[in-house]
Image (cartoon, rainbow, N blue to C red; front, side):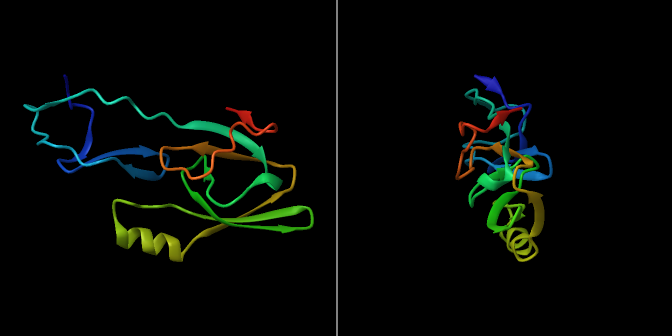
Length: 132
């Protein structure tokens, strides 16, 4: 058993940060007062990679912690829209979804992506992906 001294959050949630993204894990079954121990939980590591923009698709996660929610191809440019999900705060999540960020890249330009625990699409094994 390992004391939960590195846990961030409340007794009901484990929270960790990656860039500007907050991610929540399953509720804990105890109180974080320093006297309770929990089984060691393996740290979730994000996998970072780059992929040419023409391969972007819905469900990817950017390296700065945003989810790709729209992709358009316009000639030699790729226009993709992303937002920062907040599963710990439904109001903030709704606000972030209502004010997404649009980014534009040339088709062959590398886009920094990541695979997090809740990433829907993992293209890190794509033949043109470059692990970071």
